[in-house]
Length: 101
Image (tube, rainbow, N blue to C red):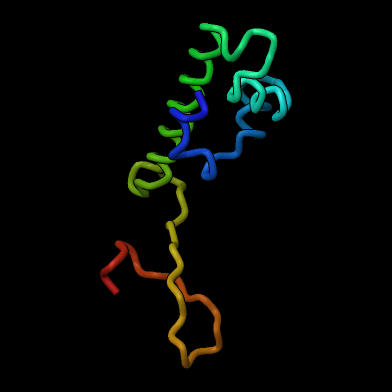
C-alpha cells in the first residue's frame, strides 16, 4: 500500500487522516500502510474507508483551488511570491491569477 501512495506520502498529514477518518492513532495507520499489523495491512473495509478519505481530501483541495466555487462568503485566495533581492525580505502577495503580475 505504501508504494501506491508514494507520491503523496510527504504531502499528507497521515496523523490527521488517522484521527479524522478512522478515529485511530497515526501509528495504527502507519502500521497498516507498512503491512505490519495483525491483519497484514488493511482489511477490505478499511481500504475502502482510506479510498473515501483520499477522495474527500482531493475534493476539498480542488474546491480550495477554485476561488469562484468556494462559496458566497469566501475570502480572496492569496499566493505568495518571493521578494526581489533588493527588498526588505518580506514576501508580497501575488496577483490572481498567478503569472499575471
